[in-house]
Length: 295
Length: 295
Picture (cartoon, helix red, strand yellow):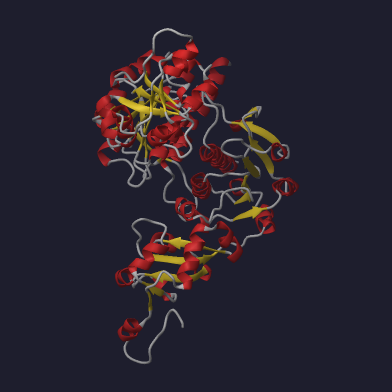
């Protein structure tokens, strides 16, 4: 039986009234959604994830929207939203409470296809960059075993704002498709190209072949981060919150940089460290551009 | 009945065996600790808070340690720790699980006196700064209604690393003494001077009287943040995660600055924005110092 069923004839309003509403949490599709919310492995296997709330759903590219679930109340309030050009399935408030990741759900949730950038597509972006416009040189993040979902989301959000070209993540990083992480990206997950890679060392080598200057953020870095020239193509290696970069990954970098710290602080939060570095790139590139414009 | 009771005579080991151990969660002191963990108001009323785990407890100034609770197992493993120069109370593992804020408690927890800096003491630090050494000019954060405990903790941690002189918080900010926030400060809560103030506008006026340049981080700022001179005494106003600075607070600033953003990002995470600003101060001051040294 289809989850959405239209009776024959009548007005649009009649048809809507006759739409079948999912009212049971044992409905197989509802069961799968709960599993998609909980299990990173199932998200990975199906190549899908959940997006909840109108604000985030407005960011989803239409061709990646697979299934749309909504409560009757939400639909009636927001029927003019462009998202309802896509087919929707009505769900009772009780069932929605069960599939939702939030305590006070809005009443709209979708199954969305994961991003499908390949490593090569991201690397291509090095070549596509116009070397004459310094502010547009490639700017990558390479993340090794970032485990905190909140940090990962914040890094995506900041990366978009700092004009990052793309993000490479080791398989050991947290799952960006975790519902909480998606929220903390504030939509950047749909706009910043990224890819999980199996072999981070191999990725770093490929970046270097593309003349990208690879800087490892490292507590034992000898140079202050602001002494490097970031007007050229740049990638930052960012390591795990507790243990930093794996030595074999750090060893692949062109240079190790550090953020000078005062007090007794042993390290910075990984998202903070990445943010300071990314915005130093932006800052320098605004200056490069000014001096190029003045020539 | 005293919670710790020493029998007469015998060896130290004998005395320890005779120490009374708290084994009931209905013990009034245990009940109060649970309340201290949960209730910001009680922490404020008693001027105390809880610190858990050996790493954090090592940071507590000795004169602020009021009561120390420990499981027998933890004590036996760590009896050489300097903290056990203070009087301790033994607690059964079951009771400890109940007073602890973590799922897998280490077995050590203390009631600690809150910081008692006054607004004037923090303002004094403007005057104490040696104007000849630019890198040591005052550097303040003024936080308006920061509500996310994680952000607040991260800001403290970053502030210490960026050499911040002190932090003023509006009463509407989250409680820094929340157990989760304390952990995320990584000990900076014991090292960065801070004070909650009733009237943030009044504080800003006092900072300006001390010739501190007050910059409001504002999405409508007209100047890029890196165009300001931070070698002089500087304070940043940082606003709420969702709604930014209250207009009446922003209006008190000398200037509004913005962090230029690309993409469709509407704003940065509050801790990220504060971090970018604080480390721009450090960066500029390293340069000021270099040029002063070269004179």
